[in-house]
Amino acid sequence: MDLRRRFETLTTAHLADACVRAQLPVRCLGIHAVQPGAKIAGRALPARHAGSVDVFLEAIEGAAPGDVLVVDNGGRLDHSCVGDLIVQEAQTAGLAGVAIWGLHRDTADVRAIGLPVFSLGSLPTGPLAAEERPADALTSARMGEWVVDSGDVVFGDDDGVIFVPAQHIEDLFLLAEGIRDTERRQAERTRGGETLRDQLRFATFLANRAENPALTFRDHLRRIGGAVEE
Image 1: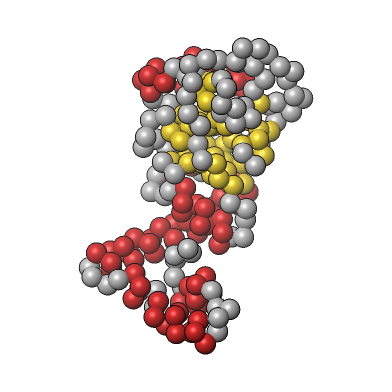
Image 2: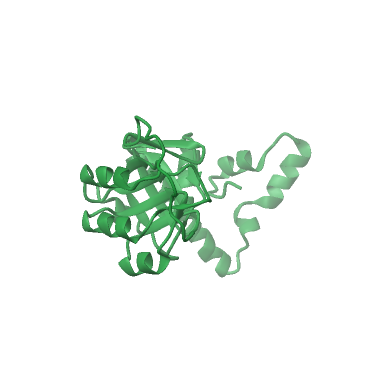
């Protein structure tokens, strides 16, 4: 499957809503692209940083084209862990991007390279000391509260990144595409003068809720087939 092509007209928000519909955990992380507007889509290639870049080189050594290097630096903000040389190495190896739970540096050079890089931000200093490398440094990476491995696919855009299980990717794409199409129709109707409240029969919801205070807006939307979940 061409993940990048399939994701081209979708957003991470569509995939997050698809996970809700599929009753799967919504595993998102608020890291953002070094170059606004960048998008990533690819199989997760985990690497747990321990103060030395050799773990990234080893991960890239075993990578397949289109993988996304997923860097676990514990969300640390006291040093950066990825710079321009690793980003260039990843691009040369055919990787689709880099997602970092931590900081990057060499921002101008990273932007010039053009490979999508997502992180918590930037800082000039790299790590000042090496630490003991965990045994699972190349098999899984913690990204915020989530643990990601090679059985996951990474998607990223201006809203952040989301990790979804590869085994469910086709079903999630179909759900996300349906949500996208419904929302586009709703937006077009709103631009034509039909309010979202009218489309979602909001007055009916308020009347029904007055009779049944336990009724939620999600319940109402499910009854009418609406796409908005919030």
